[in-house]
Image (cartoon, rainbow over all chains, first blue to last red; front, side):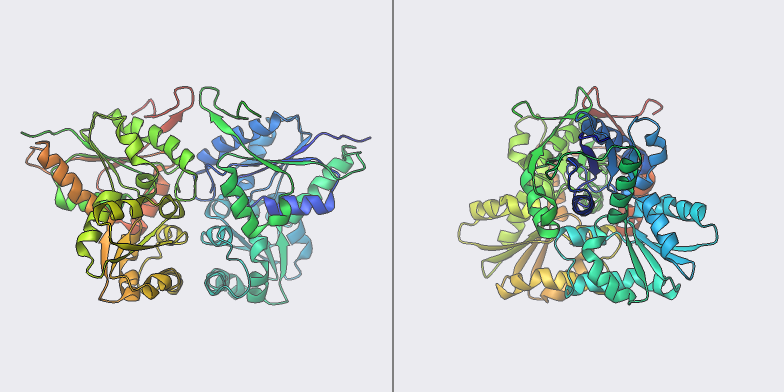
Length: 282
Length: 282
């Protein structure tokens, strides 16, 4: 059994490209349709109500491609109430929370797990709830890191960037003081800061990459459902954004160029229809 | 002659509060209706086309209050094509570019003026065009500072914040090397970093606060048109936001608490109408 329909990948902006990179490595035959809501990014500073309303519009756009599964490659969106939304769709919806929480629970030896994410993701408590459901004895320390997304999107995630190193050290200090041995990177931007985070935490701490774990989970879900792609060649990729293609390409080139290997197109918000649509010429 | 109708103040989010603070000082009798598009902030990283489309919706909302003048208290929005929009409205529209450019041209002795702003504001070239029109001989050095808005919105604008000091020093270094004697703070968030910027530039450099200049310009415009408010008491203030009231209040308290002295209300985007509207219960 196989299913050559596309996998939809949705993100508030560009962070989901790190998940696309992992999907491409793990499931190269899958067709991927990516939507980044770059006209309304970031979601991490917004209220839950606004995030849910934006997500419904974003998913509706991806559904116009007859997708067989949806990856919510955004820590903020995944924590804003994915269980609520899942019920509304008849394809599997895979968010980053559950897979990352499972990986963290499997990795920790001390039982002390750390979490970093956007304000909205940390404030939701979704990671803590998932971790306690999976392993009730765990202790969780969470830290919101509002400056990390702007740093990454400005191409400042590399070792040697003094500002990034200073900001990361400051955010991680309370987690270090808490003696964690496992740290969930709860935002898909954070793998781009991986070296700096690893240097700050030291070799005794396992880093859990939410984007990598969501790719693994999708692989399981498709495999269990007999829905892996059957084609022999690499799957095609299409990228849609709600703000300009140039802005997306420029930022993506700064931080995750290898994840964009297909055409990038802009969608328009059709106000009367309340939906994102492809412009007429496409 | 007097006119007690409200002045509309529009910003992409919270930065315009620094302009409200100046308006309150200079024109305490004016009624102010503020709209911050917090569900779609920031504008500074977006394309011009998207910014203009958002601005039209924002202004349409403020027009439901029968405003006598509009202040565009946002460097990004003011540079995105205000002259284009002005023609569409029959009340005065005052942006930050022209007043700040006039103040800078009046202040400089060396003829070397610096500008800092968001990516969109600097990329537009609007400040340079205004400066060259006002004083053709000026030399202008511009620097986009994408990390300053996230820093300010996280309450990190105060002297002694090492991250803010490091980031500011880095952005300002090329302007210092260029020997400027006047610096336009081309984004309404930047007055909150004023001490750090002043320390970095030294006492020989005049800082031009775009929010203060736009308040002065509004005062002139209303005065010339015989449209200053005639009431004896301080004018009422009303604040509208497109994302949650709590998020706005929390951030405003971090960075400009004295500018919010009235009721804050959330507006909804009515998709079918393509417009922001007050929720039914109001």
